[in-house]
Amino acid sequence: MAGPAGDEFTVAKTVSEASSYDSDLAKQFGSILSISDDALTKLASRFRQQQVTTETSIPAIPACVVVSRFEGAYNRVHVLRFEDGIKYVIRVPCFGWGNHWQREDATSLRSQALTMQFIKRKTGIPMPEVYDYDTTFHNVIGAPYILMSFVEGRQINQVWEDDSGATSREDKLQRIMSTTAEAMCHLQNLHFDKLGTLYFETETTQNPQVGSMPAWDEGELLDVNAERRFMGMVGPFDTSQDFLKYQLRRFDKVKKLIPYQLGVGKLLSLLIDYLPFSSKSTAATDPPETFVLSPPDFNFRNVLVDESGKLTGILDWDNVRTVPRYAGWASYPPWLMMDWQPFWGEGDGKDSAADYERHRRFYAEKIGQLLHGSGDYKYTLKSHLFNSIVSACGDSMSDSFVVQRILKIVLGDEYDYDYEERIGKGNWDSEKEAMLREKVRELLAV
Image (tube, rainbow, N blue to C red; front, side, top):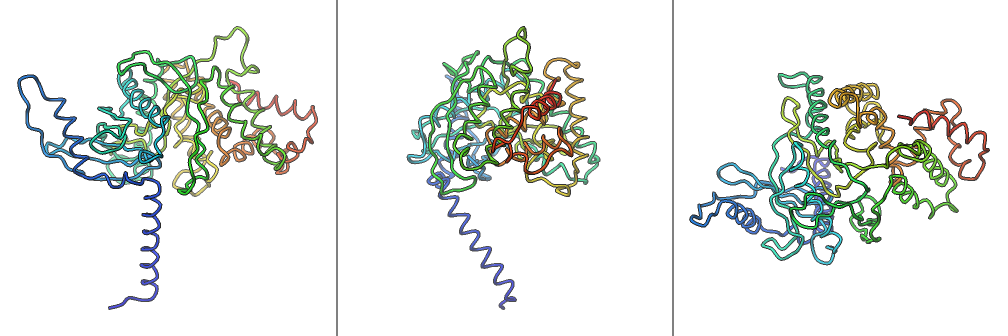
């Protein structure tokens, strides 16, 4: 029996959307979508066999099956389970097919795998253990991959607003924040002299060097038809100021066309003048700037916790690199800075801006306790400002939002919505600039 016309429309629309999704997926992942279960289970079983085989015996390996597949922004993830319950994950980068895979991609994948092993070896952070990797197509699945352990847990976004269970929501949130802060503090003893990607001379290198990073132009966000272009290797950078000024070079392309955007660029340049380690915030006798590691994609989906809120794992270390101390491991996680995201608004979820401020105070207190009020704790309380500025320097989606938000804080009622455009047109006297600089200096001082 045919249903109402509305139901037929809904079904047709759903089928159309599914077809469009499949088409987009094929454009992004290509032949990776065709990797067979048989190839994946052979890869997992061969690796496990190698781990238990001795000179005198070759024990039988339990049967293995693929239990799930899913796609992230840059990887296709395959979860495999052996009959004895052990699970593996095989991550295949979305560019790992045909001529999309470049030499720089292979270098990045090797750096990611070895950096994860390095962090796992040096710290107590709960994260996947990298067992094996291949940067080539010369393997049983015909694609580059990282083979790693499976981490149990629920994504924070599935727990954050969950009122069910024996543990109250507030207790769960505090346990999430406390155990995350504890994990992050494990990174405090890893520091480097430059900003860039870690390079390992051999698989067992104990002291990696910091090298350059590949720069890509990937076109418009979420446009699967955009052609990715390699723009060259950049860095490593001796100072965070050098890196941020490099990021701001993108404004050179629009300065004669869009006065408002030019004003945003000028104001970002002013803001970075007063970040920690800048010439205007650092004494000549201060030690040189050093850099740290931090999860590169520390969002809700990449943090796993148990039912009580205890951290069980941090996932997705793609493009991990060293970062400025003031925007590093001692910073607030992005999910405690949602009210500083361009598209966030009051009423999005259960937490208000005041709630996020309260969460940040709790997290900062925990970092302070763990570090006994010293070390990089001095950056934590203002890390939502520092991270927002750093992000805005390289992100056209957030730059004007961040500039406007900070101008409203320092200028109050003196701010108006023509401010950036006037600066872009050069209508800015030295007295007003000096006044703004002083207020920004006070806001960002540590």
